[in-house]
Length: 268
Ligand SMILES: O=P(O)(O)OC[C@H]1O[C@H](O[C@H]2O[C@H](CO)[C@@H](O)[C@H](O)[C@H]2O)[C@H](O)[C@@H](O)[C@@H]1O
Picture: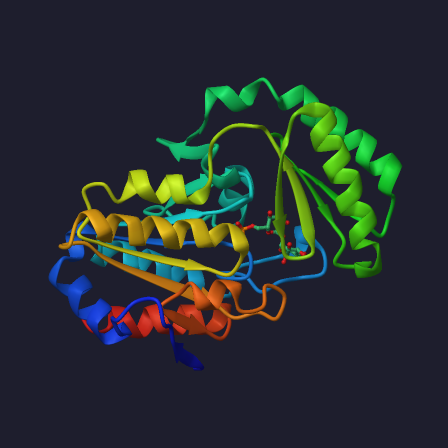
């Protein structure tokens, strides 16, 4: 497994696992989905978690306080990808949605944008056409240009103009630009709230939106010296060094994430 030491945090993976073992019941593990638990695929609808992941996550959930997936995908998509997970929490659409007692709970401020997103989805399909892939996610629309990278500028320009017209927010990602409601919500806010009473938090991410989650762990450490945050990047050549250089450690792939966590669990 390829691992490189990050430069932003003095701790090693050994320190983090030792801290986790000492404070297991007050430790939370957060995982991004695409690129972290599932390898990147050409079509967004085709991504699937690495085979070992569901078992590893369920096992982890028996050892630590909480395990959660924090994704830009809708919660229903995540549920469909993990039908066997009974002890793992789901946050979808950057935290606009979460699964609570079997129900998808949506931030009320985002709900008024359902109609705008439906219209945006329809317009984008007409304006951009294949091989640009338009992914409708109820409260956001992602415009993918993985299959036509030469059209990136055109797609981003269309997204910028539409966001301005409709008063929406834009989120860049790996060969994708996404339009979201203008609601103050990101992965960092999910983590900030979720680690309030924790002694330790781990976050595994691969994309620009995950850096906010890393920052939230750092911010928690800054106000609580007893808190230990571990930011793990998953390597890719699309975000360059941005995510890796914000992390404590970089793993090579989603397969390496499953192995790293499984090996870690065996320590306690
Ligand atoms: O927060 P995440 O779970 O990492 O979601 C981020 C985006 O992931 C998906 O797109 C990315 O993965 C696709 C499948 O591997 C790939 O085809 C695409 O190029 C990537 O950008 C998802 O489709 C998006 O909606 C998410 O925003």
